[in-house]
Image (cartoon, rainbow over all chains, first blue to last red; front, top):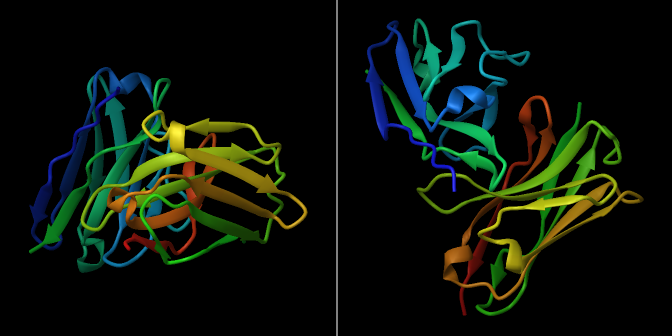
Length: 107
Length: 119
């Protein structure tokens, strides 16, 4: 089955830039979606099709996808950005596949 | 604005069947633009996609769960449902229903329903 890997945790100072990666074999050939999940809440879609923001997602959130790595970038990180972030791809063998999730801590 | 709401028992005994229903409001479940997914999350763990169903009843299941899972849709009630047979403690999780856009992934989620498997 297709494996998708994320770092367990990322820490960033308030106002700085956070980078969260999502690794997979030739993941650049698949569309990647990103979800934000705050403690005790349902996930929320923040980026779809690699780099498109749904209405409601701040412009500080951006995405890219190439080769074996997709990246979620959060510029000018705010306290309210502290959450778990999950990437997701479609794999022909297993369907929708989530990464293990990355806990973003704002220092 | 589409909203989703899960409903069903919060406690299921081992070896029995877990049943959940998701009620969709604010839009027709029969819309051809979307599938309707079930996703679960054990406490402290990542999200696991269980499967999805279209408004016409076409399904895709996660192979790891396919032998135990059945999804159905009731367009007259604007609902879709999940059944998992032969449950064990490993099936204890928060179960989410979500709208599955072919273009944009899971763009709308229910609030989640905690299901515990215990005798």
